[in-house]
Image (cartoon, rainbow, N blue to C red; front, side, top):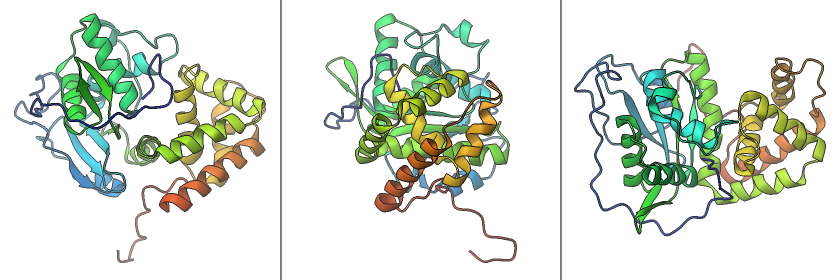
Length: 308
């Protein structure tokens, strides 16, 4: 999603890689069943992703296409161990403060946890796999599966011996998270999915970021840094800005930031008005363009006794 030298995504003509798509059989260390290999992506709503039954003998991860934005792939991993092996090296290379631009060794990654959920767009994925190819870092089977999936689905392409951005993106949650956490995390990640899928929404988000009062931008940059992001990456900062504002109904956003900021800066002033105005503008754009409301990419379940 956010690479060491990235600006806004540049989308070349989509040309899928000529090699056939193949999920590698993952190592026994990460699979509950040695024969459990993920199937091709299934188009599904985010509600269906969350409601999918757990199969103890199933694959290490399941891949879906988001029905509202089919270029966005949703990877639901069996546990954090699988998710970390697939995404942690990416997270540190693209997002982590103090690590961005570095490819960590597998040994170093064994002592680290990336995030509980992930999102990566075409520029970041292309930058990561190019860096691995140039440096000769050995990717693990899960990372190779991710690369092949991204190639097959056109999220990245392979042109003239290098990876290039395609279209769409990848978001991920894990079954290690509780049901409540999975719902909240997938809601957050889904707005990254909209950001990746819609050039118009990306452009609007960047314009909004640039129009913010300097105090609001400074607050949010510090907020990201305290959470471990490298906010010097403008693409990362803008992408996280819109997702953190949109992950809950707009009226709840100020309270979320006030509660979160207390963990690292008790007494810090939260620019409530600036954040609320930005959230309202993002929400208005999403409603007009896609019929999406803040915090509601996943529809609430009907109350007990209701049909639907």
